[in-house]
Image (cartoon, rainbow, N blue to C red; front, side, top):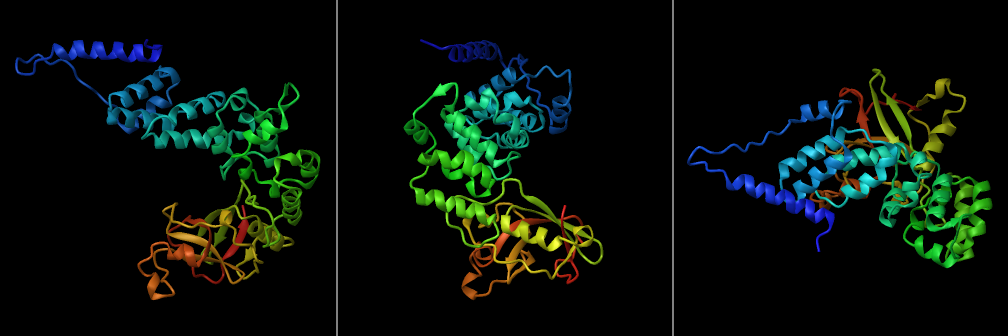
Length: 362
């Protein structure tokens, strides 16, 4: 027995067969044509308030493109999704739908960025409470999430059933959160919140020792290179750092390493407009996997690294390996340096080797 989705596809297929069965190119009877919008037209249509395209018929088009393997139509839908603004309440539903298809990277990126920006509203919505576990995992894994860790934890707990209007056992809550909890960043939470809202839920942790390690990390507030717990202390909302050379050219990096940001802020105290000269000390910032970049995933040429208690700016393409054995290793740069963030040049003339570079938190 066919469901509604299958029936729609069958009806489309029958109509398609009827139209194409009447075509005869040799006799000059061929009246089926396809016209695709180019990318500029897609952007124009997506910003048109009178545009009749809705979520429902857009998903129907994607469904057809997938079913009939029409790559060009799928690319058009992807381009449309990349520029289409959606209501915040729709975002999680659209995201879960798009994950079922391949080849919609630009559209998914747009949705993902919107989820990040509107996270504070989303995590208190009914859509979040009804979201699939995989979706919750995807959200708590995000590095750039515009919401406090405390609010995120409370929302995740409510999603798992820890709320006043539902009575769920601790065993079930712990089971539901088994794959989610490792991505909650307890060490960046406020200590009062930890003592009030996390410690009473000690059943979430494998032992009191694990919980005590979380508290020790939180007490350090990212100032120590030593980490006791397995939970990341990497800020979800990093800080934009501006580098300015002696010619006035600027470069920018979005840094999320807690200790590195604290070092800049501490050194900036008492400075005119918070501007630092290049030669300030950056204390040990740790070497946790969550605090460094291991591959050139950003396809960037320039990076900020931590080396010899200083920030150093390096050119990924021109920096030579220390040892001959590394010349054929594409990842040698990331293995030999503690890479913190990609660097974006505001002007191509920015001088990475200028000894008078100034630094400030934007």
